[in-house]
Length: 359
Image (tube, rainbow, N blue to C red; front, side, top):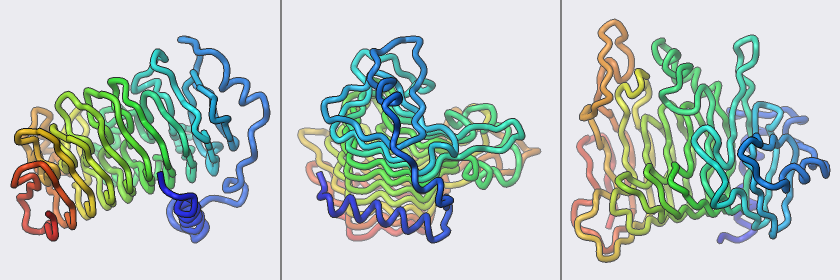
């Protein structure tokens, strides 16, 4: 667990970024959320119910360390912007609470207004929590195959539309995420400016530990520990996501793979526009114990058109429809350390990627 000084520095840096007029800039009113009234705490502490919807959070919450919240929680639309949710060691979710990708333990989502515009949550902080289950950040759709995402992808400017509609400038700090079969942390199409720091990912999943979906970018994955037991997938999927920093993380026994960069070429009929480029993967540690020839720790261009999801649409010469290859170029893989594995655990097929100083 990092020191309070580092946490404070991170929060200050995010605040400075927002106030300086960068993407996701907030008004003064949005940046100063009010503390929640007692009624919100009463909702959070109610017993779990299969029919109970998520508790909507639009104000600052500070939990008691002994709290166990057996209700899903959601931060929806611009009204949740600027909110700080501090668990102080409390637990969100229970081992028997019903969860899915549609009903995650924690959801941060944009809302579609009647006029067709998107109400976007910005500058939300969730920290010091144990989360049993999963977290999802969603804009245009719950995943890359959602109908609004698919329709947008059939036109020029899809990446910009997806990013304009998605949550941005979110801080997820000092979390202990325990997967229960589903994907524990998903950053949906267009999500930008998320910082995931000082956190631990464990439990079991049939998917990856962290998924950065198409058209997302400029996210920071720093100082985390990934130890999720996956059935066949890598720990971090960078699927058509660009400009991310993945640094200072520890990967424990990532036998099915560590960090894979690729681009789903048409899954669900959605064209992926943005290739996984200009990512920086630096100073991470991969530790293996007793593993015999695990899958690569870092794999650039992991699919490169070799996929059953390929979408060929000659009348739509856009993104992966024009070229189904991953096009993972101009990425930096530097100063990563691998212990207990075998030679060749960093795989690259494109000379534009910088692979240097890895041990």
